[in-house]
Length: 340
Image 1 (tube, rainbow, N blue to C red):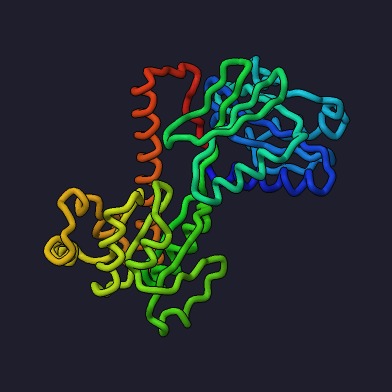
Image 2 (image 1 turned 180 degrees about the vertical axis):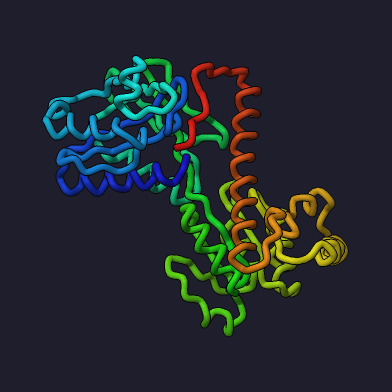
C-alpha cells in the first residue's frame, strides 16, 4: 500500500489515455531473498518506458526486452512468469542470495478500475483489488488496514491505500527540515502556521499551507491511520490546541517539541484544561524524535522522521499480525526482502 504503487497506476492511466499498450506486472510470491516485496508493481509501456520496479535489477531489463520485441503484443489475459528458478538464473537476473520471484503480468485494457482506485485513495480510503487470471476481470472493494496480498493461483487480491500524510504545526526552520525529509519519503506534507511572520519565511515548494487555528485545522483534515501530526511551534497556545484534537483522533503518530519537563507540564495542562484522558495522553511522543543526541535543526529533523518511520512500520506490522490472527491465516511463502 505504498504511494509508489499509486504513482505507477497514475502513469498507467496517462499512458493508456495517450494510446499506448501497457503491461502491469505484480510481484505475487518470493522465495529466499528478494529486493521487492509481494504487491510491488511495475508498469511497462509498449516502447519500453517503465514505472515502478519488481526487482531493482535485471528482471526489469528482461521484461522490457520482451515487450519491445513484441512478445506481449498479443497478450489478452493475465499470466504467470517466474524468475530465478535455478541458482544460475537467480545470479543472471541479479536476485540476491538466490532469491526467486513469481510475477503476474497483465495487459491493461480497461482503465476504469484505475480511475476508481485513484479516486478512492485520494479520499483517504483503503481499496482491495481482485484480479481473476482466467478472464482478466477486476473487482474492487473497501479494505481494512492490515490486510495483505492474497494469491491462490487463480485470483490475486492486492491492496491500495491513501498516501501517508504529515501535518506540521508551525513553519519554522525545524519544520522546513522535517518537511523536506518527509517529502523524500513521499509523504504529503501539510503545514498550519497562524503566525504571519513565519509564513513569509517558508521557501519549500510542494507543501500545502492550511489557514486557521491549529485545532480547527486538525478537525478539518479528519486525521486517519495514515496521518501523522507534529507540533513544532514551541508555543503552548498553538501546540496545545493542535494536540487537544490530535490525541483524540485516529492519527498513527502525534508528537510535540519540548523538553521532558515541558512535556510533563503540557500533559498536565491537557488533562486539567481540556479533559484529555491518560490513555489519550499516552499516545503523545514527547520529546518528539528518537534520542540521537541531535543538536542542529537538521539533526533533530532526522530524529523526528526516524521515529515517524519506526512507528509507522510497527503499526502496519502489528495490524497485519492482528488481522492474520483473527482470520487464523498463514502465508508460509512470504519472506522479508533483503536490502539492496
